[in-house]
Image (cartoon, one colour):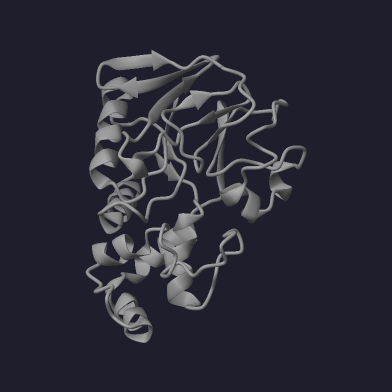
Length: 245
C-alpha cells in the first residue's frame, strides 16, 4: 500500500505538474495522490492549478485535495466581500494584505488588480468561474488514509478528529508543531513553510516552500517508511524528533 502526498501548491502549476510526474514515475498513473491544499495565491497560475486538479478528478484520477487556509480567501471574497479570515493575526483583508497573494491570484483569472475596490469585486465575480469558487469552498478538511491523516495545517492534540475545529485544521501552528505526542495516525501536513519535507516522528511536514522559489515536495508513504521523491529517485525521510520548525 502506498500513499503519495504533495505540498502547498500556491499557484505554481508548473511545479505541480513536475511533482505529479515524479509520482507517476514512482507509482504509475493510477497512484493515490493527496494534496495538502493552498492551491492558490502567491504563484503566477492559481487558475491553472485549480483547473488542472479539477479536470484530473473529473477524469477519475485518484486525487484528493484538502482545504488550505488560502483556499478559503477567493470564494469567501466573492460571496462576502468584506470577510476577513479570523485566522489572520493582522486582521487585514485578503485583497489588501501585502503577503497573501491576492493580486497574483486575481491576475491569473484576467482581473485588472489596479481597479478600485467595487470594480475589482465586480470584475472578479465576472472572471472567476463559478465552479472554481465552488470547488475551493467545498474541499474536504482532511483525508484519513490507512497510512496517514492528511490535513493542511495540523490537528489540535487530544481532540477527536470529528471534533476538530476548521480553524485549527487550516491554521494551527502553536500547540501542534511543538507537540511530540503520538496523534494516532501519522499526520502529514503543510502550511508552515520549511526548506524541504521533514519527518518529525508523529508528523511529516511537506511544505517545502514552493511559494518562495523552492521545489514542490512530493512524498511517498508506505508501511513504516517515507521518502521524498526527487528527479534522481527516492530520498529516505527519517524521523528527526525535532520539537518545532
